[in-house]
Image (cartoon, rainbow, N blue to C red):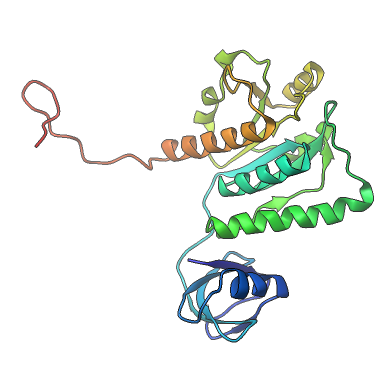
Length: 259
């Protein structure tokens, strides 16, 4: 089902007037017809259904019982990397359930953002994130923060705080810590050149757990996706998604019976 976000308060029967960008996407890019039902998400997370009328209007026909995405709240502190790779990472992180993204600079960061262009860059990043949320049927948007320094990352900490470091012993793998994930977690991913030993020590002293992502060296954007995917798996495994009250019947020799 196609999906749009709006800043307006919604109610059944409302005629919603879309902004030019959303209207263009819905009417001309995806060629939505009045017969199609679309999902409309208000900024407070309430979910409605509706259908298009004459451009740029959408009729709100019903409210659903869907709610915002459930925990955990995942914060990704990602060092700035080359623009195309960073934007790809934003898109995939949104699809993988990230809640907030904090770009940061560190010793090995090679990307420099001009202060006067930061607002324009943030608007572009927010647009990419909204598109990814719309495509993946999320009912909440990802928050993108202004770039900060590595030394400022402690202000974005959660219940569980992990930092991927390629020099950490593989025995301290990410999976060793994810069994603790509950309501929130913060992940730190360094730039293409990695974090320095001094930076890793600093983050560890600030309360981040240094962890390995295995023997393979991952690109920064791949490492971000890996951590988020593992977190999603661990949270669902820890919260009983796959548990069942039904136990397989056993035969006399102790093996599960089969038909």
